Length: 341
Image 1 (cartoon, rainbow, N blue to C red):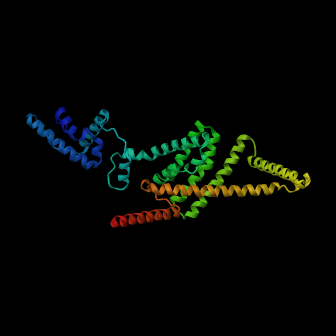
Image 2: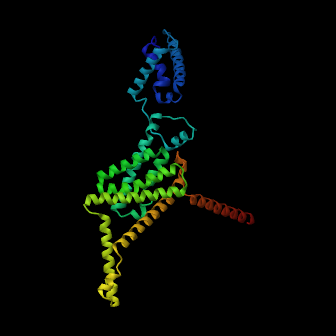
Image 3: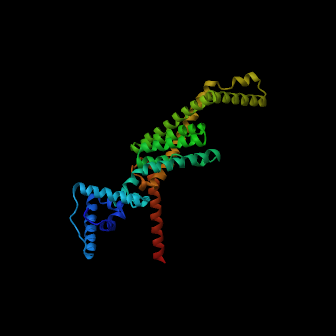
């Protein structure tokens, strides 16, 4: 109380509040008032032993608010209100409702922190895949960080992760690699995450991912063509027609066929274009299918970390049942063998 001597006020409140303001916040204002009453009683006993004047009436109204602000300021000045990091175990217990939030301010920033870490991980994976030629191994795992953020904190933070990763790649690797990631992986992963978060049928999710892959490839071709001042699609088509002509001439000379007859058997530009489109769509479906399949396996294993339950490929549940059945069979066989022995 304001009638306390300075030493008594510091002693009484310092015993239960000034040392750990963050701990007192866990129970809200009622916890703070209860702690203050206990501390006031302690200070009263101490000063009574010293035979000093003591006033133990509990402060109310503006007096209480001023006292709270005073000790908040003291705790912050001495470092007593410093927030500590929250462990993964604490996050999971808070999400499950088994534990109250120790530091709400820290938990409020966790989506931003995880988005930043996942964006950095994406940039490192893309760097290794492009510069060290590890795309064949990493291509199916590029969307995993985006999926983890999307199903823990929502699609909005997944979009933030992709934008941050593209910005990092733009600075460290250049615009070509950044555009390639955004179109080939980022766009497909965002559409996948949106469809899986909405819990649509797995076939619709696969169609969304395939559409994202196709659209991203087209945008990538157009943007890179703009940078190189070339129509890359026509350039590839012309190269394919030239290769077909060279192959036809080689086969014609081996069989003794004239050049005119050999050139007449060369497919037209429109036929080559149709084959290219078909191969492009097949490649997109192939890539989207195995991306969805591998992501479903990983997300099913880490489902306890996710706040949003995604729509996974049903074959994963079937594989899990088969694995469980095989495990139960082996355990029964082991028990039967032990009984015989």
